[in-house]
Length: 386
Image (cartoon, rainbow, N blue to C red; front, side, top):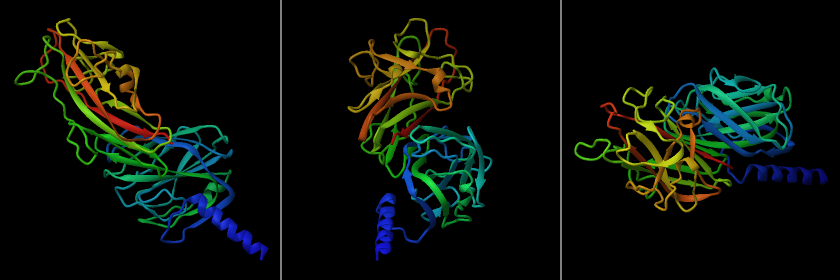
């Protein structure tokens, strides 16, 4: 009788550790008695576009114990460890040809697409943050939510993980040590990263946002007159709007990445390599017409729970309005905007609901600015901190 009571208690403990979820089929997995959930876990994507190739996924988490091997398994339906895993084409990234910044990464299983990564030769220290970057992934081909299951193993034990193959099904986890789940989502022009079974919703619109289901395409034209033009007589502005909702314990970071390759982060009439309407730099400055300089910058009108990065903070009391103000300041950090993960624009320190912010872009031309159609594309990337 004593053995039965202990067995029942252990089963109850395992169910509590996994969460109170009903699973439709009994998965095949082995869990050590000391298994614990990793903390401070997130994944950053270098490109948010569906079907994008050669994408980097940066995984960060804090393990509970010191281990040497890692499994990352992408599924389209749930992050629950050991549950059945669906991964129909277009719903999860393809990891064929993956490499890792540390250790030796190989693929596991023969699903279509291949969706599981094994890494050996690592040093993950219990209680210390661990970061590994996976390169060469292909994003899901649709705008969709998907999940990553993360498990750590002692040396040689990761071979016990058998992922679902073909189009989905049961997984065998083997004897893992620590575990965690991460939720991600792709959307047109927006990359959304969120951890575990927490929630993160982020959207961008060309008009004010009531909720993320009522947005308009953020295609902005900066200029004045008919047709609209930029010249040396005025500083013209246009605004895009964002909304963020997340229950991440430590909030979220919003970064901006420029498609133009010019180092100043400005507007280009030559395909992006040269930007004659120059970005203002990492220090926000005031802008004025007729000063003989072509300029491009942005400031953020913040919501009540938002912290704006210094580059994009309006130095006046105008809170970056929707029209030009002589005392407002605008920045555009070209070096960071063209980096792998972009430049931090704003952040929150905790959970927020329907937090609205406004990104106001300002531009002016010099009398010597070459004629042409000047463009720039800015992608916003949201990363949850759990």
